[in-house]
Length: 401
Image 1 (cartoon, rainbow, N blue to C red):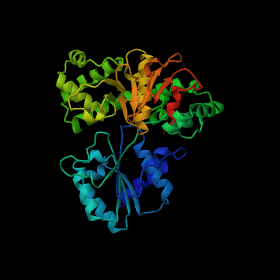
Image 2: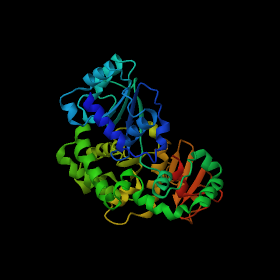
Image 3: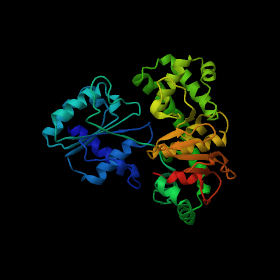
Image 4: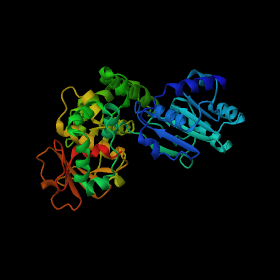
């Protein structure tokens, strides 16, 4: 145990504390079993360490942070760790990268059932399965999906511009009030394009010049390691998956042609649809349907994007089409703020949000024809600072979380 506490101290002494993401307040830390999921690079480890730093004294041995991908677990089990920790009075056990420990769910279930005074906080890949056939933790665990940075968070980290979040309902109700306030603090359009290209993954701040290289490494890791392990993708198919991402990065959202995708990548239609599901689970793409309640496993999506604009700029062989960038941004920000995003339907707008809000996306000159007659219809327009009636600046949707 002493070895683990030494590493615990090292991790915590090096974690940056100058900025703590507001996502930390979404979590019910009083729960006995918490899982924080998310794609590689969004800051899960940092969040766990920051929580410990802010809620426990440096020498408090009632809490322990460890990572399941260390050599310690080549000769020790999670259950033996928990047993030993509880014996010395342990109350909080944080296990990072738990998906890298084989059979983790069975042991976590055993720990949860045996040590009722121990609180467990886990982090893992977006692909982690709570019900994996070995142990169903769904009734015991609270799950949280951690997104990358919002535009609001990027402004704070990169420029020190601190602006509070706004809910979607507040933004739609009084858009000009909020936009006027933001513009009194900064000129958001000055920073918007940089966020679209570089602002989503926190590791941008660790090495700005290597950002796209690191982002491509993350994509390769997710496909080569995580998808092959957690979704049983054949290693020989990984190149086809990467080709699939390349093709998607060049698509316009309204051109979802599964037959063309299959032909271009050499993947059969059923396999293409299956791979698209897995790529979305890995937070590399986003599929949109007109009705989420009634989709089938092998149903063709009505629209499709990469998960966020940074991926688009990193993977697209040429400059991405601006319309695709805009739609990718707003779909990402809305979903990351826990809204349900669907395709509104042909000639009805780009997105239906939470079942009753229609949003059409475009440039500064975008009109209202597409949402004519829609009671809850709005235009999200790029290139403007102020809201005019139901025409809201696109960047304003970057302050939802």
